Length: 294
Image (cartoon, rainbow, N blue to C red; front, side, top):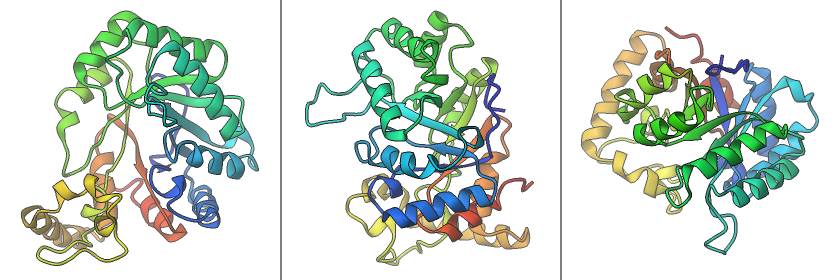
């Protein structure tokens, strides 16, 4: 169950941040999506800003071949969608415009979950809440969520919108980033809000493929200049040495490093799903094996 909603989501969700926003070819995107269905993944998470609509367009074409009730579809709003610096945020005008644009690209009448990608301090929170509620009232989204909000921002929204306003929170969470456990997890749980965590593999660092004192593999995210700003802070030799020490633990339990890292985030009752990326079908299959691991 996703929070207080009636949505039932797979513990592993397929995300579209890097790969389906232009990072891989269309046939690879389709193959990974098909693989997700094969292993029981029903939860697909994207955002309007991913490739400025490219990821939504890709899934719109692929998912339109399947019954709409066979998957749970989530997208987000907030990021800058054109060269106009004002074409972003959580104003009523932006939310109304962006939900329609997202639905058009996704080739659907509604999304199951519509999320505020970040908090917008430039817009009165009352305006944002009213606009998001209108999206639901108009039948364009079934439920609402947020991503990377602080506990103060969550409290402010709940004081105005009530505990039924949101059903999900999407924070970064992994063995290497545990901050949400302190305040976001308990506050959310007290208000019927589940966690959908992103980067549970810490941009691939927790797979163990990066070795201390060695250059990253040429085909890896750490070696890609356009992506490495998210991974650099996790690439110290101290961190990489600690990750290598996890290998013995994984092997003792008969797990891969990927399964160990994903099972670690899923061990928390607050976590409904872990979002993973994949550029090959075999990665989807490997990620899915973590579901159910104690």
